[in-house]
Length: 87
Image (cartoon, rainbow, N blue to C red; front, side, top):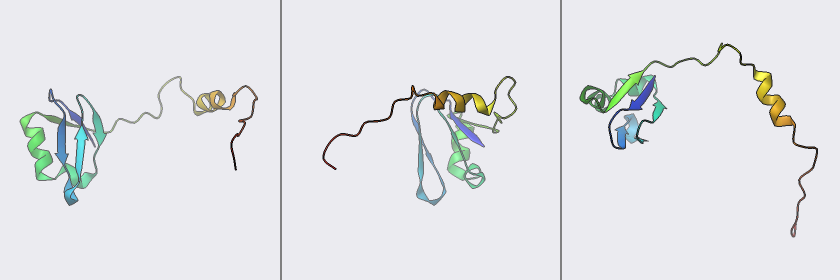
């Protein structure tokens, strides 16, 4: 489950276990299922400062392949990194 900041200011989302999630303007973060049912999180959603969304899978997007990103990372020009300094 994702949470998105809909307020016009940064918000702090209190999470179970005393943890806090800081969300800037328009930022989105993932929440654990236990955190979704936490009362302070529900208050933020009811007030309209935050919105809960289902996770959207990026797998299966048309035209993308895992090999394309790997090929770009392997072409480094053939030069090795030269280490300098006292070792």
